Length: 383
Ligand SMILES: C[S@@+](CC[C@H](N)C(=O)[O-])C[C@H]1O[C@@H](n2cnc3c(N)ncnc32)[C@H](O)[C@@H]1O
Image 1 (cartoon, rainbow, N blue to C red):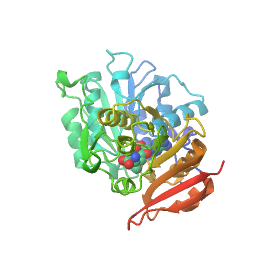
Image 2: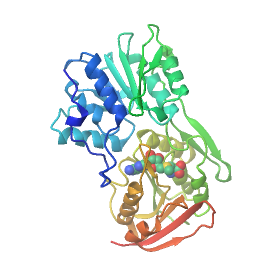
Image 3: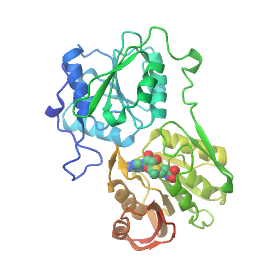
Image 4: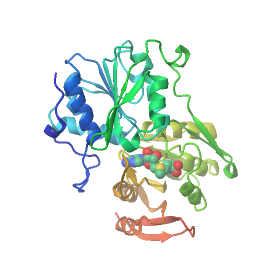
């Protein structure tokens, strides 16, 4: 089986963008597929695990092997599924968000492909997790842009997999080759308990602790923007409904819930590990029931139901700066809020959110006076 060349596929990013300069693949994906084509022999029964495919270039290219596809991102998963469908490829892909979800427990992969993630903590978690599914015959191939691969990256592969070398750089991308050592690098007692890497920090003024799993935004300390937003939290009434949108560890929603025992909380994030972290943060500090959604923005939530939304929006997707996710967050917030509902947004001063918010809300006010961060209060949603 020969992998499909990336330039023969029609690939789109998700969310779709009108910016033609943003492609759904990069030279690290191309380098990987070319290397596999020229150096490895695969057939339909080859057992392949693909980790952190961004928009589906790798999964589409190797779809004939029905790979197991591990991504922490709901957006990436959506992109992968849509690109498989659009290219009329095998859609029977086993998506997982951790190795416990692998349905064949005794599987040993022939090939593991890893796109290097942004956070070493996520890479560590992933390398630790795959140890039980590889042996010394497994080919472990990783790739990233040169700026994403550091000495610390190689150190992690050496530590958790085995001897690791890197290729020459081509079009600013590099491959990494790891040879699994014959003795397992992870002790047996850790095998089923590898989500123990939780970072905890305390926000003393509110007596709340944040619990953050690998790769989750600001898991080691409170983000400075979020700290500013804490000075402008809404005064909530009994039985109101509040959404923590893009919740990360769930710190913002949990802090508001601390002072209102009747508040109904909903946490949303596109990262599986973020939502899992928010569950832990909320359960350990509050202990009541709440709703948790792994979703794109607020998809799946009912319109006109919420009194408050808090949001510290992302302005990057896969290392590319973008305002489109924030725009979608504002648009959907207006739909989900009641007529008298309010959205509070914190952002760096340089981000031009006012015109975007004004598209969806009749009133938009700056309510902070911080020199670096702006807190916007948007109300009277345009329906
Ligand atoms: C700047 S962080 C804020 C996290 C948290 N609220 C805090 O203040 O620490 C933005 C969060 O938005 C999430 N996110 C990014 N794109 C998203 C999308 N399309 N839908 C839902 N959440 C998204 C990210 O995973 C990240 O956790």
